[in-house]
Image (cartoon, rainbow, N blue to C red; front, side):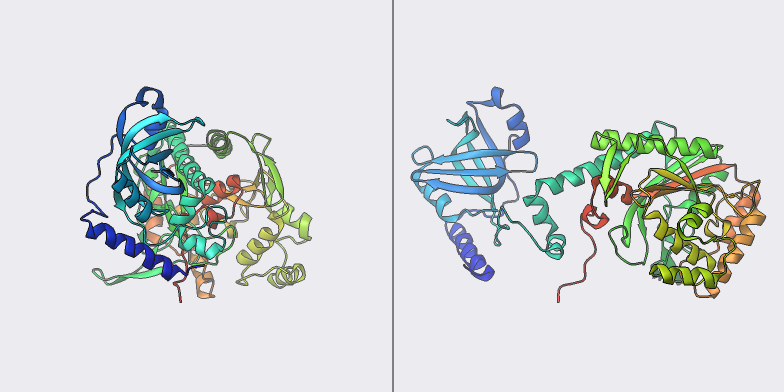
Length: 483
């Protein structure tokens, strides 16, 4: 078998031959009358007519005085036939001697239906559009190594129609979410990606430097939560944003350092009604994008059209582990995590309780709403009237993981200041995921923010419905450079 370098050298020889004959091999202008998708769709009315088409050669086979190719342009595929005599002999021979799989060619010819019923163009003349110097992956096996698939994603997409379909569904997923919210009077907004403090979530941020202002800044870890709340104070009652967020954390089937999230905020929306809106949004996404409500992921079967029960945060953990995260000591929580074999970072009650909960949620198929979160794990949520230690927070649990989070947003400036001060103490104790205080946000609350319901979810929801690890649903996941 020839080496890659030998194959490249052979193709380059063909390229040089075309150039010696005065042929353009990478022309700036190409004549094309229709996309291949249009030809397939309108074939009945176009049959018998001469057309100019362009595409990439994906299959190539010869039978004496005939050459058949399958070519594609991203909109559709078509068969082409070169027939000695119909295609001038010199052009026929040049095609046979210089065209390889992966090349882009422009074909001029007449459309007809072949004996076996294939829609075909009978080629009268041809032009090289792009000469590929490296071969495509072998059709039936493609790229097998995961790292190589991610690194050569363009080839993975080219050779794997099912993968392309995933990203077409992903685009429809976000289009559907956007349309759903706009139809309910949400205004789409854009908020900063560079922040002085990373409000709105708890995660380790990426840090960079703004040279003009001579300031250290952070890439955002939420889709503008504290900024969108400022818009609530500005009198804009409903906002949403779909954008990239960045978290300097580990990689897993559920976690990436860069991904797309959706967050919306609605003034005067009741917590119970907000939960109903979330359920309806998820159902709409499932039905519009996937055409179903029943799914399987990581060994869990779930139906988004079923009832979504409320699960109590404290009692659910206690039922599964015998630990009450409100009353157990931090040492006891650490001992339980060690007993369960759960890895954890941070020794604060907040981190320990969160680690314990993440162990428990793996057993829950859902869909379900986790509710009544302790205040120490929900620093931006409104406290409950009947128990000030708990908050109006909910996490959506599907297939053993969190697939969205919502709050009745805290709008008491005194309470918010106290919680930010508590977060600052966690940072002083070395908690890299604690929320950075934003006292300008507190100033906004002092001017007054209406009662607000806020919600966020991201690519994890799409990946779960797709039944794939989140990395598989990224077009170009971050990779270490080649050695």
